[in-house]
Image (cartoon, rainbow, N blue to C red; front, top):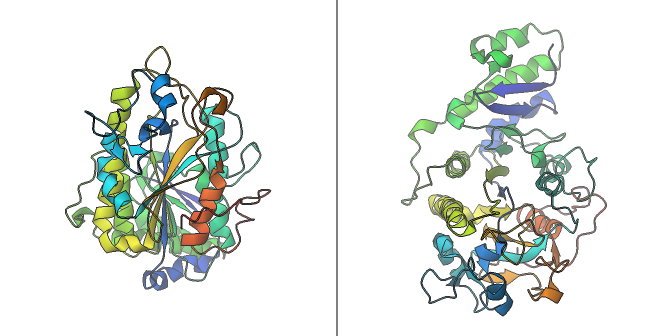
Length: 406
């Protein structure tokens, strides 16, 4: 049965949500001539330890609570990279240090969801839906932005996730793509995985539904549009070298889409394996190598193009202030978010720091939250993408004070 939702499979899921008029794809050529701002979101799934990512080396309580896993102070072996005399980057975040000193990278500390859940599933769902504490929300915050700001020049590649499945944040009424690998993007038949590009146009030409017939043809045209870009021969610019990981290659492909001027506005990538309940030290070091290296390569690759791009990172919650008996950390509360590029007012740590003494902690164990994550999201949408009203994006929530980060 033909529906208005077509699944595109490339060994892994790539979904094209067709909740729009058939003329949508016909505007792809026009979109290619329009220079647009791009928001790239990166989800650190598994709850990164923000206290060892953005190190509060000026806090005595930090070292008291973490006798074996705390990052040493600047100047010591494997010490933090000083940012402002109080906070520093984990040494494996070194590739991003230059962006902070140049005023291009900003950090928002003690941010997150005020919902008390410590469930990875619920916390990720709340952050992607943008409605913490409400499980009935059907769409994601990025999709609601896209739907609220529909425009005539929208491209088929306006919203793309470089993941196997469409993330919660991009699910909803507005069209969005999930593409695991650009080079293998195509139209396949059902579960069989058999390519059907040759017959796709013929099938829809014969369709009785006047709406589906042109939509199907335009979907096929979108595939051809991407294939017209020589993905295989792409060479990162400015000596950029991406990590050879799924995450690193996802950022590389986002850069390809931006450079190909495909009309991209919102991109999504994810970095996993941050749940370090034991032996955190070497594990987070390896993960931060990949995480920071990917962002730095992306920024280096785009060069001056970063003026039109903002990278925004997030994680569902932070970790406990105190290390556990296995030299790891357990599920916590407050965390840190990074913003890089565009007109980000970088070189600064934003947000009110609550302190790490026991009486200052959330429930006596975690970093307290002083900035709601939706305030940070709203800054990116308003300050970078030009949204004038985010009340539809974050229903039931009144955005708090302006951070001034963008």
